[in-house]
Structures are given as C-alpha cells and as structure tokens.
Length: 521
Ligand code: ME8
Image 1 (tube, rainbow, N blue to C red):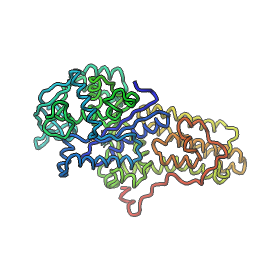
Image 2 (cartoon, helix red, strand yellow):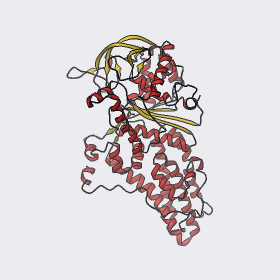
Image 3 (cartoon, rainbow, N blue to C red):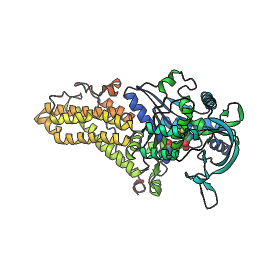
Image 4 (cartoon, helix red, strand yellow):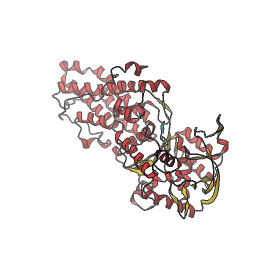
C-alpha cells in the first residue's frame, strides 16, 4: 500500500498520429496543477505523461507519410515533449510505449493474465474502429447514408475476422460492480460513474486483446503471430513507469496504486472497466480514482472567426500569454463538464480576474508601499476586526483548495480564491489607505501590511495554476524562494523586508491593431 504523503497522477498517453491541440494541453494542465499543488503541500509527487505509439492507427499514419512507424513515432512524440515545455508542465517522467521498459512490463503483465487463466485463444469476428482503436457490438452502431457502419463516437468501423486472444472480461462483472460500490469516488464525476455502472450491469463480453492483421505492436509472448491490442499495451504504461514488473521496486511500492488517472470522457470505459479488471486479474490494486473530464469545444463558426487558428496551444500562448491561458482553461469551464472556449471569454477573464482584480490589487498595494513606506514591508500595528476578517478569509483558503482540488473542482477552488481577492479590493476601498497617509500613517502601514499579506497568501496558493506570474508576484513581495510552500503560509510577511520596484504582473489584453473588429465579432 503506497504511503499517504505521496501522490501519483497520470495523463492519458496521447496517440502520435495527431499534432498536440488544446484538448491534449487541457488534460495535462489539470494534472500539472494537481502535481504542483501536492508538491507545495509537502507530498512526494510522481507526475506522468507520455505517448501511445503502437496500433493500427499509428501504423496507418506512418504509412501515409511514407516512413516506418518507429521513425514516425520518434518524430511525432517529440511534439508532445515540446507541448510540455511550452505549457510549463512539471511532469517527472515522459513514457513512450515503444521503450524497452514498457515491452518488458506488458509482456510480464500478459504472462500474469495467462497464469491466472484470464486469457484464452479464440477468434474475433466483428466491428472495429481504427480511429478509436475499439471493438464495437453491432447493436451499438448506426449506418450512414453510404451504408458505412458508424460507432457512437462517429468513427467508421470495419469488419474484422482474425484469430485473437481474449481476456475473460465477462468473469469480472461482479467484482467491478463491487469495486464501484465500495468506492463511490473511484469514478468521478458522478454522472459518468453512473454511466459506467449501468454499462457494466448490462453485461460484459470477453475482450479481444490481440491482433494478427498488422504488426506494429508489442509481440504476444510465445506467439509471434499476434501483437497485443493497443489498449492493453497503452494502459499498462501507468505501471511500467513506476517499475513494473518489479513489484518490489521502491517506486512501485511507493507510488502504486496511482491516486488519479485523469482522462477525457471518450476513454473512460477503458480506464474504469478494462483497466481495473486487468489489474485485479494480475493480482494488482486498481488505481484510486479515474476522473473523466469534459470536452473543450470550439465556439462554432463565431469562434473560429474570432480566434482564427488559435486552438493550437502555441498560438493561444503567443496571443494571450502562458499563465493567462492556464488560468482561463481551468477557471472558465466547470471541470468535468463540456465547455466552450472563446476569444471573448478569454479577454473577459484576462482583463477582469487577472488585470483588474488580482493584478490591480497587488499593483496598487505595492505602489503605495513603495511610495509611502520606504520601499519595505510596512510595520503592522494592532489589527482591527476588519483586518482580521480579511486575513482569516485568506487563511481559510488552503483547506478549501485541498477540498476542491481533491475533487478536481479547479473552477470552484479558483472561484474561492477570487472571492478573497474581491474582499481585499473592497477592503482597500473601505480603508482608503491613501487618505490615512496624512491623518494616521501608522494605521496606513497596518492596512498596507494586511493587503500585502493577503496578496502573499493568494500568490502562494495560485502558484500551481500560474507558476511564472506568481513567482514574479512573490518576488515583488520579497518572499524568499524557499518560503513559498504551503507550510510557509502562516509565516507572515516580515516588516522591514526591502521590496523591489513594483511592476504590473498582468497586462490588460488589447486587441492588436486592425484585428479589433474581427476579434470582437
Ligand atoms: O485516446 N477536449 O489518445 P488521444 C478535452 N492514446 N480533451 C480532449 C479533447 C478535447 N476537445 N481532445 C482530446 C488516446 N482530449 C489514447 C489514450 S491512455 C492509456 C491512452 C484529450 O491522443 C482527452 O484527455 O486520442 C482525451 O481523453 C485524450 O485527449 C485523447 O487523446
């Protein structure tokens, strides 16, 4: 059983047939925020991402490019490493399913499943969607106008007949239902959990876990005619990365079971049904949680006109800045639900939440300190009720964020932080420190200290979402780099600490010349 002070979080491993887009960045961003949050909260974190490089879809993409699959995957996998650099992701490892460590792990898992009597040889005849790398029953499909068979995902299916090994999934139905019952937060959000439960209740068919009609995959032990079904291969990445098949490896003992597999709703069934069944069959613990987030949607024609080509992460970052994009994606769309991305809502968040609310709070507090307190943290006198009320609210945020992020409710966590930012802005207006300058400079110093201290707490807590911007803000508050963890939250700002010249952290977004009309339309 892994120790409670560690945290293992994983992203889906992405198919290398596609260039990274905003959806991939979204899943990994959510994990990055959790990884950073847990590290700041004193936990030992393992944060894994990577690429899924086998299977028919990738083989076909390589063929279309006229290169061998290994050359192709080497090249395209690099795009996902580049995405991690671009987005400032703090992953501890990047796994590729073509690595030797992963072959060893998959083959060992396979042998375990054979030993357990859960794999048998048969033959598959049925429908397969290469785009989803998934098998479908005929009852799940619809016919399009040209008579093609279409999966619920919209992917076209082809008829497949081949010898295949099967995993005895049907035998795991009751144990899966028992798992969902015993651990109500194994699958989140709850609506998705209910969908999985009713799918499993309706009965499970054995699962084809090998293919013989193409060769780009991990060979099945002792039967070279078969390669493993890409999903069995892909899911295993989560244990490979912590040292499987060596179950006694320090990393395995420390980090397995994973705390969280973050996935998009399209791939929940693989993670919440097949994966725990494989693991339990091999005598391994299932992960603690699978969270299925929603879909980021392009706001129709309107957005594509106004945002142009900015749905590539690099374009968004170039246009709006990295940390504003990170903030926007987690604040705008309630995490777990589908949501729209639009230029208008992005600009509203940047100019409202960031520039006006937090940026301006920090900027006006620090400018008044620079001007009136000799450029150093002011000396607070006795605190009034109003001072205490604001400081207490800021002090309550850590627990609130632990709860909200613990449920992957990033939007609610950020909303709670911005409520305190709003309270702090009202406090400035009420206390009017500029007026106190002449009448009561000691009280002015106290008010400015309370403000700077509130900004310090907020900045420490917002680091996981906007690491660079909060680094700048904490530099301006004179907080030493080694005093920015959550354990340092209660050590308030020290009077007399010299402060650098204040500078704005969040510039307002201004439409570039000549683009205003298109962007606003
Ligand atoms: O499915 N909005 O890889 P994949 C939000 N290799 N998230 C999105 C999105 C969107 N519009 N589009 C994609 C695979 N995603 C398998 C996974 S894991 C063992 C193997 C995200 O490259 C979302 O997380 O098709 C989705 O589940 C994932 O990208 C699919 O990535």
